[in-house]
Image 1 (cartoon, helix red, strand yellow):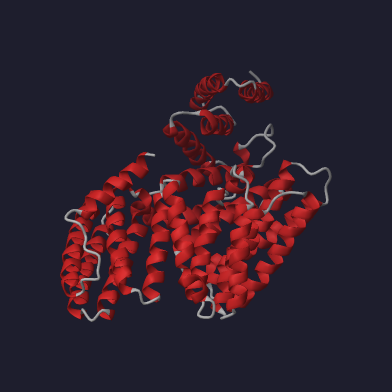
Image 2 (image 1 turned 135 degrees about the vertical axis):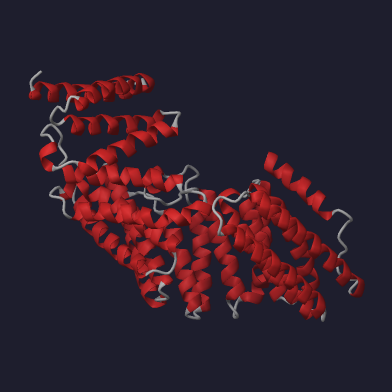
Length: 502
């Protein structure tokens, strides 16, 4: 068959598979694409020119179909991984004219999808830290390919998404000037994209995606400035971002409550850092109000850019920020009992919603408020209760287990400080010794890859038992301390199991 005929046949196969998918026949589309790939493989084995390029096209179709409809994640990974492996070794002479993308453009797009799959595969923090560097390098390669592309207009969306992901990865990696560098690049890329998209009429889905990306660039640049402790710069950018988001809402009648809520939280934190307490409280309250305006249904466009758009998440984050603002503001703190009222309300709300993660975070805020208010007997009892719940939650905490371990450490330190305030220094020292042994064990275990959570849970049980024994001895000299029951953990564990079951 002549080469041009082969090319037309492959384009027809692509259109047919896509047509089956559009006709709501995804399984037929996947089956057809598998057969199509099998035919092309025979041409690759025969060393036919452009056969590998056409195989990449078919593999990419299979990846897209299995990504949307497939039940086997391994097949999806194999498709994109093979496509990436092949395209890395091709030269421009191996490419073919039927595709609208150049080799460099296709390489950038396939590498980005490969990186997304790799990112999801590294969800477990016990293995993620080992692969984070190579993942960042892959996305940096995507950006480099896109910078050299001759199809600037076609790849701008890919570039924005890659820069967004790099910002999140750099933020996750820790203190690094590159986070700010990439946030500035993203801000500039979305500025150009925003100017071009808003000049067009009518407004389509792509324009809405651009509007989201522009506002999100303000959020990420603010976070980068906060990471660099450039509070005033972050305040300036956040205010500009709020003006832009407000203009979008007014002009395009398109909600930006998630981004406005985030910018409000950032403004609150920055004003607090610069000791502008009244402004910090004002923005914290506004963020709480904006969170309530977020639609109940998550925004798919925003989540495609890596940002969670779930209303409940931002209601809780705004409320946690309000607790922190009240707690840390020396001027206005007593009005809200150092955040105690808001923390208890948040804990109650999440208990009703069976969200153990946020329930425990609000419980810790309530404990901190009691501690700061000097209500040490109540704070110690709260420490005992919260430590019990954290230990019970640890075996099922999944990828969040490092945060739970940090919370356990914090609770022990709060309790030790309470013992000291109540003039029981010996008990404080004993508790710290037990906590230090637990931390030494967890650090040792974390250095070993893929350790089971049961190992941490067993040691956490030992720490809880030690805490209860110390607490009971403290109660002997301070009868006003609530006495734990003979098996306090089992009652709380049953409660937690009931919440989980709901």
